[in-house]
Length: 154
Image (cartoon, rainbow, N blue to C red; front, side, top):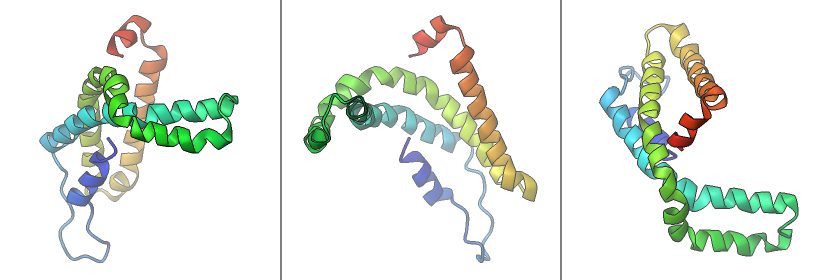
């Protein structure tokens, strides 16, 4: 997830404003599908190895369970144990991330198509509006979707 966007920008990013080169073309559904698959494979391992343990660490600090002086040792512990936590914490997230990958790819493809539009209004503001709309739909499904279905999806 965290590498997909910078790599996509480096490969398909806009030319500089003063460039005489052609405008960039949209990546296409197959390119975004490959990036979505990369997101689906790598996101659970990065989240399970680092972000979830660090989130728990900061929550323990906030709740007073962990003293501020213990943060350095606990952070080193998280980093050194991240290969183990990738499997134990990130492994169960793999199915959910692979289910989310097609939604990532489809949404990114739509946003990319709007962003590379020849219309100045659509290319300037359309990608923000599309991203906001897709985000609100995802939050609405997560908030108001049937609990049984959401539990099965992870």
